[in-house]
Length: 345
Image (cartoon, rainbow, N blue to C red; front, side, top):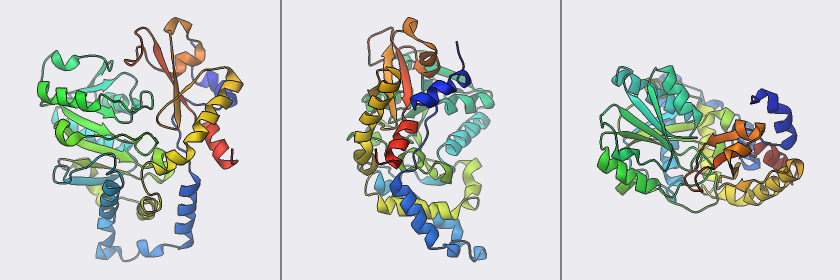
């Protein structure tokens, strides 16, 4: 089996990648340039007044309003808000605190093919990682304890699609494993033109934190704008009251003002997703299905038909939405898509 490095020439010529790269959309570049033109030195002045300490609070409230067409984040339940460097810092600190609370005896549960960071951070803290196929009825089996945490993304990082069974899954989990904490990762929210909602008010009683980021939705990966709403404070993030980039917080606010809804950018650029897939097919002959997330595409193949590229890009051995025995291969389309955006197609 070839490694990712061995396949870099193919990936580069095909215009795809394994890692999901954000695209700095023209709307984001314009907003960033407008902010720079303002020379926002005022954001840095008079730190002794502590005016910077609360700058992130307005951004959190604006984000709640921005995502309200999809998910209602009840601040009476998720009372704590921490500004973070993208969503990855939030995930890392949640896992770190879980390791402390369980004395590294806890278990992190994920679906096969989920965001790799969940597993890597958990392993760094010597936690047990349990992977489940999405079709697995694991909540009916095994011991039930307080030392369990489940990470799940919606839209899903597995294939870039909205998982229609999320609420059903959360509802069953709440009934059968009420002590298991669920971390809902909405980092891909704002990347799909597909209309959908996430109802955690009734179904998500186990959800103890919601992590979010503007990296992929608004193309601010290197600005590191993200946060977490949680039912209780996360000790490792408390110092972020002071340790934050105030200009990037201002950028986040202006983007939420300028981009009217989480659907605006994907609705505008989703036609390019199909064109990008066609262009990749012309280069490689590969059949790719467009994901709900416009940065991604996927394919289902029998594992014994995998070539070297399929082996590297495979997310899970048996996607639950297709016939048994098929593997799911995920492609990031960003290299081709960004080129098309910047060249006006």
